[in-house]
Length: 156
Image (tube, rainbow, N blue to C red; front, top):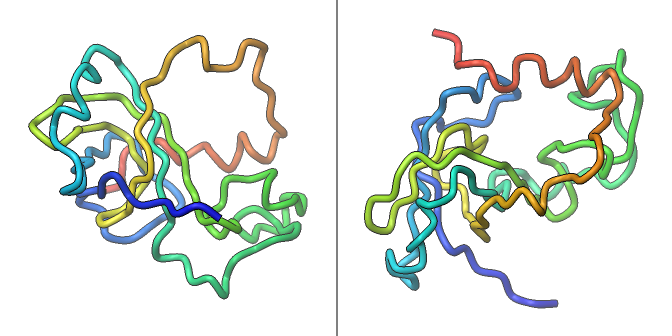
């Protein structure tokens, strides 16, 4: 076992997790006091960043280790927890690629981070094309349907 401590926390308007409408959201990823703004130096030369974070409000009693229907929708096939990106996963870790907006001292502003206010951030990585898939990405039809409203702007 190795200890892992947050390097930052999310400051965002969204207080509750919802399944959809994360488009056009803005969030500040504020470094923990153990880090200075120097840790972010040079990040603004990149267009995107990958954020690794914890689903801190998921009750451990609701962790899923087997197959289930994504979003509990019986119209979609039951698939293993590692074949979906649901928050009720064994280690409660999330990962999202976001567009960098700007740096302001110890705050990295990003667009479209699907994490709520107070979320612990465990790592921040610049996105390099060499680390993106080198072959075509494929997914089942249910995943395409599931994601239709995910990155749409939040409804008014």
